[in-house]
Image 1 (tube, rainbow, N blue to C red):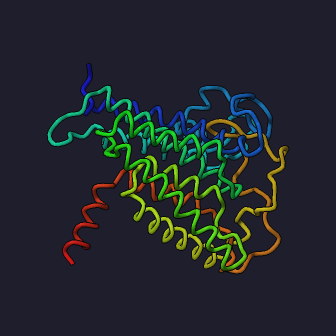
Image 2: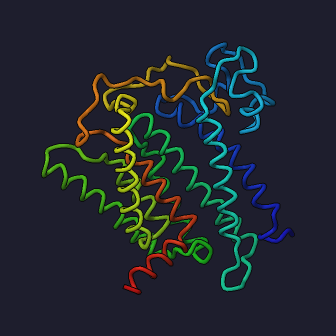
Length: 315
């Protein structure tokens, strides 16, 4: 049996990550429209021809074809390749982190495999939710609610590998989701405006269940700061009209997406709001920043904990 810390495993994880990244591109486009995520297969949105398997290899095909359809030359959004590459890197990083010796003891390959599978599914859900939220300002419950169960399952099966026992998972779910729910209703009570969607609190409950209650302070601060930075950039460069409109629906016949080079539709070519909102009332999707903060904690937990201990306990 190949040991858990052998280079073979992160390379295999990266390949699997890239392939699943291709599928996530399909899910992120089709799910909000109620379309099947498996049929029809990948095809170009311009010439309507099916994309051959050798033109549909994650990352490689996009680079080889320079982001264009092999038949008609239609350009494909770089987002598809970036999603595949990002998930490949994250998949490899997860294996390296989970297979690292703990107290000089190398984990069993079976335990690492289970922990990696659960963690990778968690990351894939985060990425899918982020893409959908960016495009539609909505977080599907069909993704976030099962994600809560995933976190509890990980705490039950592999707490020694993930470092999150059951009680921390349950507390993370309750405190994380409860905090955002309280903020949501509190803001509405004070202003009469919806400051955050209910999908965000379910996403935070999912993240809290998987990462445990110790991650919540970092998640709340990091997601808020990164969301604020994003809003400032949008305002500075006057990109408000590029944000999705909560009242707009993506037309079902806007384009036929699908697959690695997904289908010629640029995610930027979505319906735009008529006018830019005031900065205080700008609608910013918060889900991607919760997800980004969760990834930062998942991969670099020890770094953040060391920094926290250094600045808090040395003060």
